[in-house]
Image 1 (cartoon, rainbow, N blue to C red):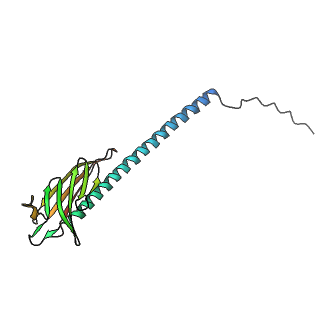
Image 2: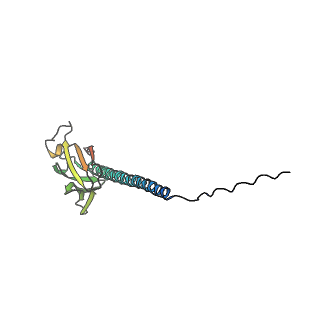
Length: 183
């Protein structure tokens, strides 16, 4: 039996990384982390922008719903055959509302950039919305003619509301037409 030839000694190979490979890996990791941080930052900004827009829309809708509900309760004087509206200007409306047996003086008005609902009976001034950039009221008679000839002939009120927040969200503009129910 013959003996197998001796194996040659393995050539010594270096184990590890060269300086070039290390620098290349560090540069690639830097690029990947920069791209990742940019994506995370933009996603955070987009989320904040959307949340501000949703908050503005929610606030504007609440204000419109509340004003509409109050206006629908305007008292109708059956003797005078007229609504008890004392002021109807483009930015303010004052009226008497009836709720069962209770009658209250109510005023909707813009004070600076705050839309307010005032109740004289209980001396309460409620802020419905902040950052209001436009608020107008238009008054119509029963035939939808504008302007109504007198306060007693007002049967419909169109509310126009624009809310602009400082959170860089788009302005929210809402319009609604309120039919005064007690006529």
